[in-house]
Length: 115
View 1 (cartoon, helix red, strand yellow):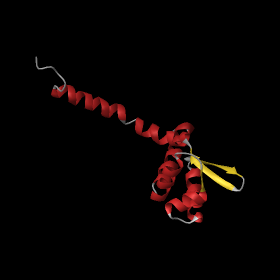
View 2 (tube, rainbow, N blue to C red; view 1 turned 180 degrees about the vertical axis):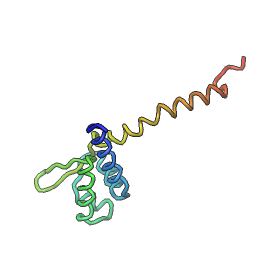
View 3 (cartoon, one colour; view 1 turned 90 degrees about the vertical axis):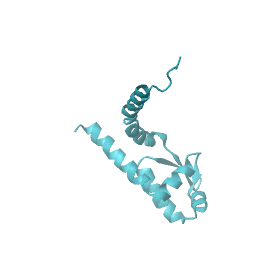
View 4 (cartoon, rainbow, N blue to C red; view 1 turned 120 degrees about the vertical axis):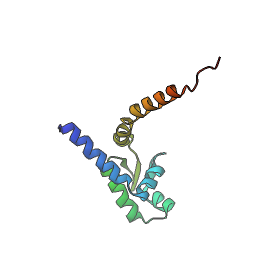
């Protein structure tokens, strides 16, 4: 296995692990619209700032969020590049499924004129 393939697999493992937790998925949904401070995320989800900070650390290590500082506040936002690993994984499944769907539709004569 090449180093590049191994790195992709490791990145995918980290992303899926990070997304396996419901709180982390909820955090990701909150920060997808823009930079949000830890306290705001915690308040919105009814979690402690300590718990949110832990989840953000996991998301950041998986490359799914980025953090910046604004004065004394830490702001977090989605890293679209981090989500690309998971998207690429699932995109690999679509060509085969779309081909099967196309063949099934053509085989059933769906969309053909009756005239």
